[in-house]
Image (cartoon, rainbow, N blue to C red):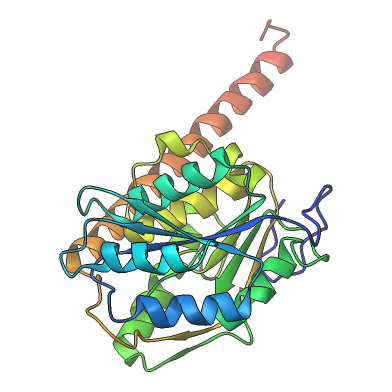
Length: 279
């Protein structure tokens, strides 16, 4: 069962106020924005730990993250040898956090587009603030109360259109399944077989959200304000958009084919029963 409007049923055993929270922040050339983002995050959620996953940033982001971690025991750094994609970075971060027993694992960009001050709403939705109990809380730009700041109309239409296509093709009742500001309960990540995830970018976000829904877990969308990055260069590319369109179309076709096979089998079963034949 899932709920796209934030009104999902409470899930049993939700993390309580003492839940261990890990905020995972992938970086590649984010030396300018990372210190500001981490300072805001530590002020907004002082009880949360942070894992910076750096993909060998040539601008020295990794070394900067190490210095920030040396000054703050709640900040950790995972170095990877080179840029190999957002999905792989988050998978590495999730694995690191699950191995260390964190109860809630959060995705958050380092570029300032996700406001750390809004993280409390996501944590409350998964029960880390003592209420709620969803398995996945999505920070949503496209539900009532959500909005974007400093995005051109074309970018908004691309995001809205992509999410509409994903809902239709994949049957996932979410209005912002491609967003990257989200909080997972640990059990949700254990249920989705992270080792089998090969998607990247928007596809990675959609893929994981769809897996949580199909696992029968609870997904809610929490309105957020999304701002264009304050510094650095966007990692968005035509290749990322093309991958999202292609994979979503393939996944949708596979879903429709599966539905057709089930209908044919059910129809054959009815015919055989009427004829008194064994199934």
